[in-house]
Image 1 (tube, rainbow, N blue to C red):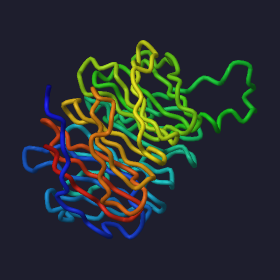
Image 2: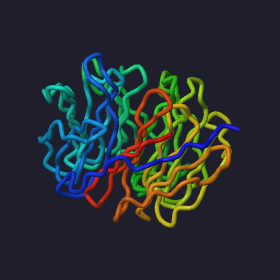
Image 3: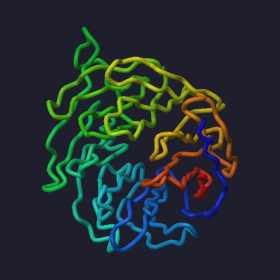
Image 4: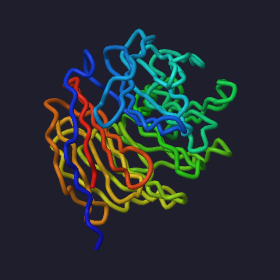
Length: 322
């Protein structure tokens, strides 16, 4: 049996931001530099960090409310940040030049992710109960994938608030999009046909984070919920193929290692947990943070030898994965 992954603390930066750190992602390496870490905070800034020392490369300003999501283009050249001001800022990672500013109605911008080919930015549409798709060549809004209203409900009924879309994830082949809602439902779309396929049931509280397993033809989706559980779904078969529990609070973030073998989660219980998919169990609990952990992110490429976590305690932690 393959040896399970282990985490060891490499570096922590206290007061990495002036306020809670809400989001983090890795920017892939380019020909001229290694991967970088991007973080976004309630302090309205995005910061760019160089591993392993977590040296601060730059602080990006421009949002006038807290930053709820950061996303990196697969090329590593550009990235996007989204804030509670409902603006998405697209920028050059190395120069910080603004490439585009995407505006949405209030409370309609939450998590974002570029598709695997980099042609489309998907934005979880919050109160619009939809996913918005932006073309990365023109920065035009090209599609809105809406979650159908429950049968028999009238447009005026307040069912929309339950379908408030918090999280979004692309399948590795770019053919499917999944989004997680406030009421615990996960909606799956066929991207090419811009068509709603089905719901994935099982959670009854907000689903704040989703990630597909990285195999190219992957049907396996991990979801993290305020109900304290991580579910593993077969997206096409609509079945729950596994559930993992152990956190004593909301599960705010989930990520999977690039080799698909390990899963990391961050929680309001202040811990980061590493899980073994085959064992369906937590194999390690890291207690570096003193407040809730809003995001965990494996560095892309190879086995995923680095994991980062960020927290309401304003800090970043970097772990070596072996």
